[in-house]
Length: 125
Image (cartoon, rainbow, N blue to C red; front, side, top):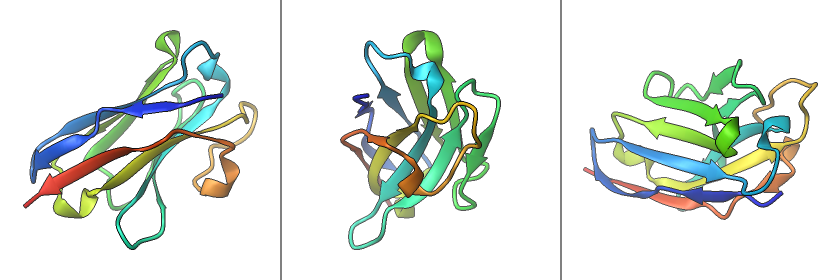
């Protein structure tokens, strides 16, 4: 499945952005979906994940309370609403899909088979 991430940009600290992950023409509802990010010079890290039906969500401690992951399966799209952004949130954000509808939602990137191209989020201080 091809994933298309979009919505990144430049925002001031304290601001907000919403990034989207679309899977045009695919039954996205069969996939758990996650967001990961990679800052310059750092390893890629888990940000948030959501089950195929939106019933379960998981967050990294660093974004809990500020970010919200959601999905609209009718639109084959997963969203990451990012509020109260900090300079340390600056990274390339990647969405990923795990065809594992009957299994648990996972937070390790090795469990995700399909990846989008990434969208840059830059938070200025």
